[in-house]
Length: 357
Image (tube, rainbow, N blue to C red; front, side, top):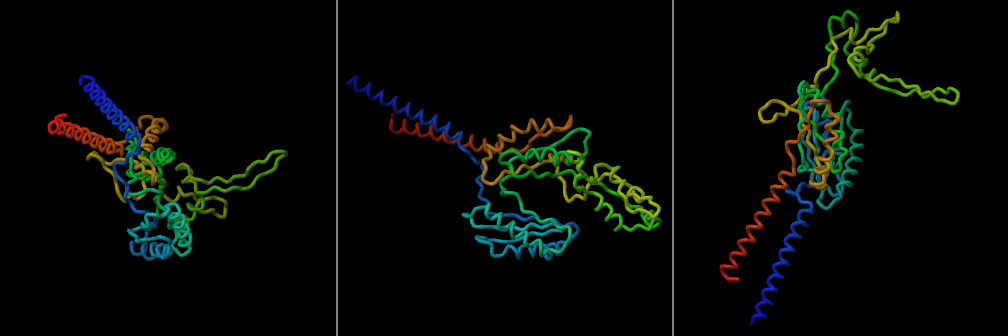
């Protein structure tokens, strides 16, 4: 009888050991699996964005959005087609069946966009396909700030320094820069000077448009060498902007842009702003994850790239995340783990009370 009880005890310990080992191994396996706290239930959708500065909502819809919608008709596996237009902008949503290949859908949409451009007669219109992301692809928001820097300076650094480096991170498909203002070259024309010099506003516009470019001029052979001939006329400073010739007189003298107005740097007309915690306006970058990518792997890659990005910024400028998807993921995993532990303890208590073993 004593040996029989010892065998039962050994069997119990073996069972408990197997259960404990399975529980610990399961924890490690689950921890290594890609976990998404927010399941992506977004439809297979391709966005086409349209920018038409100066046009009213009716003209945007009639002259641009409608031709694009007409060109998208009869796309294979398309289930829905709609557009939303505002003054100067429009977005066309093309939705496909859930079992289609999104990359093939985007290729077909891009082909139809090329056809639609031929039917759009409005100049200066920009038609582009949206990034390969969904409505739940926003995984991180970063704020850039620095003492002594204006919102326009911070917007420029976020657009031309931070965003290009973040787009190189695996899993990142796009970075949206919000807040601040886009820096532009501006000229405030003097009407009296224009009338005195006999120059129209169209003359100034053509001069600015035609003198901000670069072109190649071939090369000159010199012995065994080839010297490249390049015409560089890109504007890089206020002095370059003010030195644009508007008209050349018969005696060879030129009238420059600085002679007909006041040259300055200024912000582009804004349509919105970004604030945080009631402390005024800020500049942020919203990181969008590629469709189908793992949020944990993408966030780890972003964290590894941020130190190098911070080193490329001027002294005194900081770049700090204030929203990260991993916070929600960790909270979800912690909640599930606590519920499982509490459930296991309740089961053990019920077995002890009811069965007595």
